[in-house]
Structures are given as structure tokens and as C-alpha cells.
Amino acid sequence: MKSAAVLPVIAAAEPVLGANSGQKFARPVVVSTWDSGMTANAAAWRILKAKGRAIDAVEAAARASEEEPSCCVGLEAYPDRDGYVTLDASIMDHRSNCGSVVYLQQIKHPISVARKLMETTKHVLLAGDGALQFARENGFEVMPRKLSADAEKEWKEWLKKSEYKPVINIENRKISQNEKSAPYTINGAVNHDTMGTIALDAGGDLSGACTTSGMAFKMHGRVGDSPIIGAGLFVDNKVGAATSSGVGEEVIRICGTHLIVELMRFGYSPTRACREAVRRIVDRDRAAAKEMQVGFIAISRTGEVGAFAIQSGFTYSVTNSGTSKVFASDSIFKAPPQQPGS
Ligand code: ASP
Image (cartoon, rainbow, N blue to C red; front, side, top):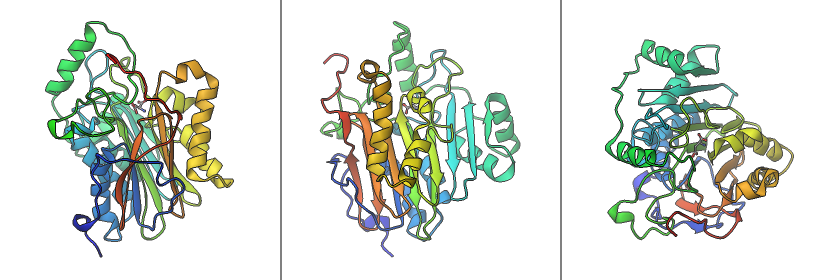
């Protein structure tokens, strides 16, 4: 069995536009949103390459994202408009078991709370104080309420205008020195956001996980698509799995990932199914869609991988025994989105 270290890794700085459209990957295989999905994939791959289960792999992927400050999810991420980091996460396995937490604060790994909920209770979704209480009762450490230095700086900057306007492809982090030449950066920022991971294990089972701090500077209490099963994440072991990143309200309106999996059930390829979901968002309000980003990734039960987005700039990472690459998704609007200052 090859180890991750000997994979022919193509640096995250080289997304391959549309190169995998409709491409089938031998299982096991893991796919994550964004270039930062490489971090998530590496954690998932350690499990998948040893013939581990997809559910363990996707949880490990989400945990890796949650503890990587540059991944822009977890406690170091940007807060809501009142300065609170509120986290949402969901997980779903090959038997349609699922668990979600929303508006969870001070917990480092919301994805593991979601999994605990899935595996030890009859419930699917816990919110806020109840989710925190459940986490505490199950041994999760409650962390101090504290913004990261970067999040605090950006929040204070945002407060000057208090204008809620999610910027396409750039919700979060500024690039580091060694990423300056990355082609997927736009005006000095990296396309990092919600981390969604879907995996097909060696035994042919699918699972998915999705973790986020939600839209930066959202209204206090706002919850997006990521923890909503059928919106930000859906898995049907007989068909495929899908997850999303971007403006969650749009994804919720069309039950995005459920729609994608259902379209795949009726013969759509993952790419075509993702495109149809994006098209529905754009058709509802084309002018509004021009100002926002939503990206979907999907995998079929046979390992075919696809993606589609409203805007260019959405990337996703694919890892299996022969591939570890960032791909650039195709999109409805091809021109690079306008960014502040451009
Ligand atoms: N989809 C997430 C939400 O709406 C955020 C994002 O991906 O930017 O909460």
C-alpha cells in the first residue's frame, strides 16, 4: 500500500481547470472543497489508504480543518457581527445516519459533537446551549471565548462600516508569504471557506462531513446550509454524495445537495448534477447570483467526481492512490469576479 508521502502530489498552487470533468477515480478516494481541502484530504487519506471507513475518514478530514488556523473554520475563524464565533457542522454515513450541530460555541471540534449525536442519540440536530451541554456531557473541552488575533483585527475593521456583503471566494484568510504566487488567489486572499469532504472507501461505502463558521460577520444566530442535511451535505450510498460551500441561504432554498444526489440517481453525472443545482440558483435571481459564490462537489458511488460553481475561483481537492490534486471547478460566470479595490 502506498503511503501519502509518496503520492504524486501536485502543489495546491496548481489547480487544473476542468481536467477531471466526469473523471472516475479508483476507490478509495476523498474529495474536499477548496484548495485547503488538501489538508482535509491528507487526514482522510491516512485512514482510507489503510482500508479504513469513509465515516472515520471524513470526520478526520473535518477535524484537520477545524484545527488548522488557515482553513478558516473552527474557533480561529471570523466571528458573527457581534463578535461571537458560532460553528455549524454535519456528518452523514453510508446508512443515512446523520448528525448536526448549529450555533455551537467554544468547542474545537463541532464535527465530532455531530458524530457523537449521530451515534449515541436518536436525534439529528442540536442547537446552541443544548449542543454545548451535550458536548460538555460527552467530555468535549469547553474552550475560552476568545477571537484569534486575525479574526479580531478583521472584525474590528468590518465594524467601521458594518456592511454585510460576503465577498466572492474570499470570506477569510489573507495569503501567507509562500502562497503569493498561487494562481487561485484574488487580491491577496485565498479561496478558503466551508470545508466539505465526501469520501468513498475501499469497501465501496460513502460518507460526508461539513464544517463551518458560517458567513463572516453574519447576524448573531444565523445558520447556513452546512449543518442542514440535504442542503450543505447529503449522502445516499446507492447513488452518491455531495457537499457545498458559499452563500448558504441559496443552497438551502434549493435543497442543493439532496437535489444533486437525486439527479445522479436519475442518471446525471456528478458534474451535470452540480451544474443543474447551480443553474437553479442562478435562474431564481441572475442579478443577485452575479454577486455571490456557491460551489458544489459530488461523487458517485462508482468514484466519478464532479463540481460546479456560480463563479470562477471555486476549487476542490481530490486524493486517491494515484492523485492528489487541486482542481478548478467550471462555473456559470466565467469572468473573474470583481473584488474590492480591483
Ligand atoms: N456555506 C456556509 C454558510 O452559508 C458558509 C460558506 O461556505 O461560506 O454558512
